[in-house]
Image (cartoon, rainbow, N blue to C red; front, side):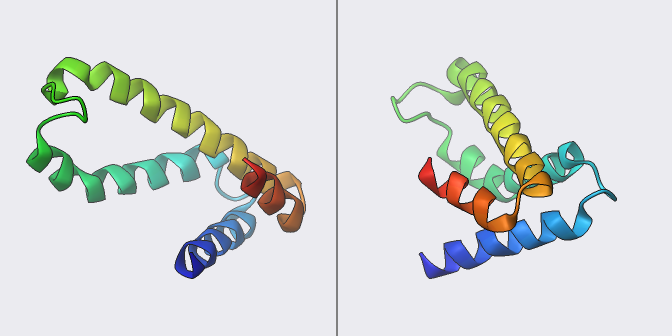
Length: 95
């Protein structure tokens, strides 16, 4: 938990530092791309979804989930750009 909180604080500081210089959609895209690249070997190795179906049969659900997470993350970064860090962090933690 301490590592997670520290990393989320680092993300908040990074977003605030890049505010106005890099659009929040770009920040979200590069974070999502990094996550996919890190997780890709695990996804390819697993080969099956949690319900036992091959991933190619349920890929559309993974794509929808990814899109929704991208939108939520972009909204959070947008909030970090315009709200004080403490308020944005509390709102994020309340979810």
